[in-house]
Amino acid sequence: MNYAAHNKELHHTLELTEPTIFMKSDSSLLKDGKPFFIPDFSSEIHYETELVIKVDRLGKNIAERFAHRYYHEVTVGIDFTARDWQRRLRAQGLPWELSKSFDNSAAIGTFIPLAEAGNVNDLSFRLDLNGETVQEGHTREMLFSVDRIIAYVSRFFTLKIGDLIYTGTPAGVGPVHIGDRLEGYVGDRKLLDFHVR
Image 1: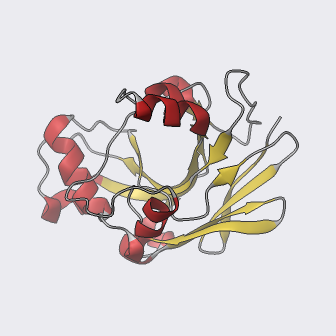
Image 2: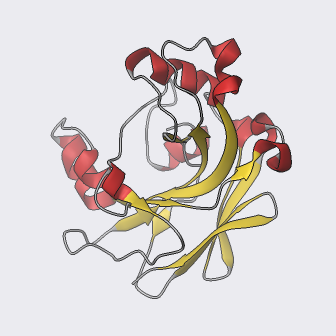
């Protein structure tokens, strides 16, 4: 919920004063271009493309002005969401984890140094589905910057080396189907490429 246009497309409030945070388990990670298998418990799996940063220092209660010292690599990832389950859980006022944190629900691309990617506050990223661009985002459109997110999260959780922070998805989310190919880019660099089975 870090891009206003995405919040609008899902009919969420645009009046956010703090980042919306949820966690994924380590079994959620889908790495190395391995295929994503649609789980049998959902009939509506959506892609949500996000810029991802990797924490490279231990930190707690990090001041926003120092947050840039805690990451030096970025990539693109996909937060797969069981949208049917998410609607059901939200309607009951329950946590989202069953719809967000299932096995292989966090596809992750190859990390590149920020020195190559560019200014984290001025990065474009996108997702191509079967060769057509379906999502495009830019970090300057974030409601909460990467550094603000790090400062906020570190109030509640100690950040550890290797932790990954998915920073929110722009508008354009949609369903995936068996046979789809997903390719994710930061700028013009393709960092994610896998199929849906």
